[in-house]
Amino acid sequence: MRIAQQLYQQMVDHGYTSLPNEACGMASGKDGQIEQVWPLVNERPSPHRFFVSKSIVFSTLEAIEQSGQQVLAIYHTHPGTAPVPSSYDLQSHPDTKVKMLIISYKFTPPRSACYSVLSGRYVKHPFHIGDR
Ligand SMILES: [Zn+2]
Image (cartoon, rainbow, N blue to C red; front, side, top):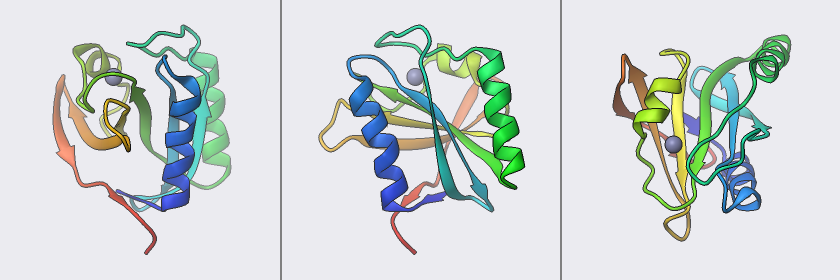
């Protein structure tokens, strides 16, 4: 999966403004290239979890579909821990076709990692930040 520096910065900034709580959102595009970032509101603000209601998820998915793109990843932030999925993250990840992207603010600058998730297990997925 690839993302331009400017778009990546948009996700990182979203995470900064949400500290000390987690931030989350979706990333859409085509063929593994992220073209748009969709910040969502963490409806139950917490430093350890995020929650977005189904109606918001559906309307965002609809908007992505209407723009002719696909959902490539769901991103969320870890304000104080490494960019590694928690068991809660794995349980709540909705779709094996969608990657999980985690940005960790434990480090400066923040570090990110991307994962494929399948039946409660995760495998690191290549993630490239930068302009082609
Ligand atoms: Zn998490």
